[in-house]
Image (tube, rainbow, N blue to C red; front, side, top):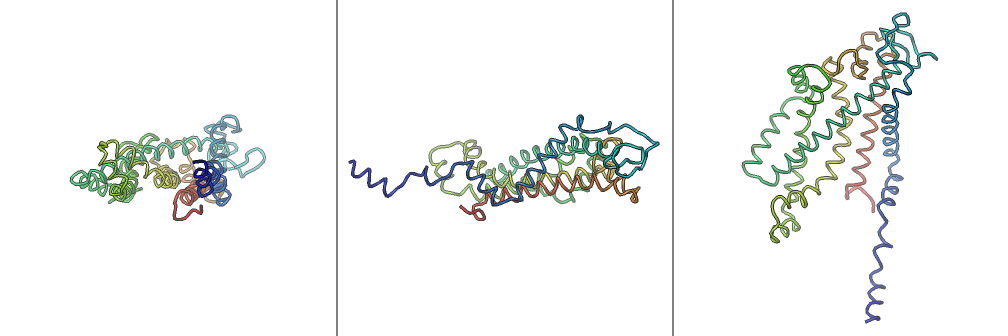
Length: 298
């Protein structure tokens, strides 16, 4: 028996020596994707700046000083002042406290709603699939920003309604993605084995099918944060976001366009939007390379 055991060990070395642990795998993938590291660093910096805005900001973002209006960047005002003498640096910092949470809330809810809807449509099929997909098509038939504008205008222009409008218009894309993945997976052998063992529909859907949609949904969600930031800024740019006095980046860019010669009024909030959108896109592309078995190198 000992000879057999020793021969098996020689033929089959322990998998512990062959398979790196999770932390080593993550570090290896990060070294192969330095752009992801840049994206993570940028996002973390903005989160820290948003959290510490009351400490870092030199002035109240709503404080007006008309005597110092339209001042270019200087030692006393790092990013200059706007048409009412408000400190743009302070407003950009406080703007992160509005934009980042709003975008994350949108993506959190649309990912849950869209994933559940798509999973039910793909798994149940038949009339359920027809009804849910036609409902999805109804929302996708309109341009996203146009439908969001219509919903926000109907509900009233404020922060909560802008977030609600984006949730309503963004969930169908997740539903389509999840439905396709479930349709592909539900005829696989491991799903058939679960059925043959008497597993319930709830168990198969929640424990067998949905886990296989997590990786693609996670990649899509990380990319979608940037889209949510752009859409939220677009609504604010059009006056359908938070109240006009709030330090929201899209609203600041909109005001800056009216004073185009004062470049600092639109440049810095616009750069803030661009940096966050690019950072989340970098993270999403990196996650796709890490989680997609067709693109990652083992």
